[in-house]
Length: 335
Image 1 (cartoon, rainbow, N blue to C red):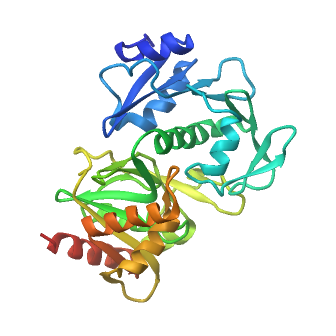
Image 2: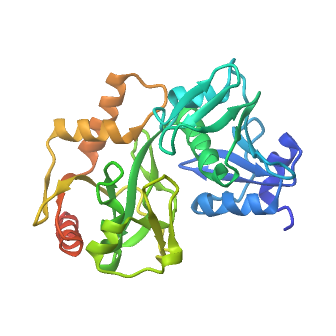
């Protein structure tokens, strides 16, 4: 792979051949890797936001060292603050409760989602990933942390789809049925953009989703009454098998400023979609959103602004296809 026109700043800053710029909501950063395979991993995550021009000198970026290493290293640039980037990420990152210090002297941290074993080890400019296959995940969390601290964004753990010029943001914790509903909504005609994470710019609340394959649990497969090959199952988290299902990439870009927020709120025999009260919307979104250095009152104000701009729905899910139909009726009947 030859260097392209947008890797100039990454190459000059870190001395690497492979790199490119990313522009999200007007905020520009860069990503760099020392292998072509590493760059392709990055491209798969940031493909909607590849910039045609290089980032400006001094722009924040992430460098990943992969070549001839048993432990990939993720580095942050520039890093002017005192202390460890990993400790700062663990204390105030997009999933700040996810990481727990194991050995302060060794600088090792566990990923609570994956168990108590060491997952990351701090370095002067970032951290090493102790399970090499997981470096794209941790590099992405690091990039989101940069975005939340260096630009006017908030993050949201959500699935994103769109239909008829309107985006649907499905918000809920793991196991709430987001991925299952994604499949049903796609079968009903919605474009699928991802089931994990999106950014919202401030103060305009424009939506920027990040692509990810759709992963379904056994319960979702059963509810949807579909079959998948045995070879597609995997366990990233012990005892939590998921299978990857293929959904074609959307032919249109995601609507940025026409959004319906749908908050997953349990299961019932029949689906029910109703407007969420202001207080309930704030409570649910506060748990599912990621912020930079804002105080709690500032965070509540941000969520209140989001609920004032876009319709917020409380969804009690029933059978997947019935639920998808109920959600689409509410979304499409709104002006």
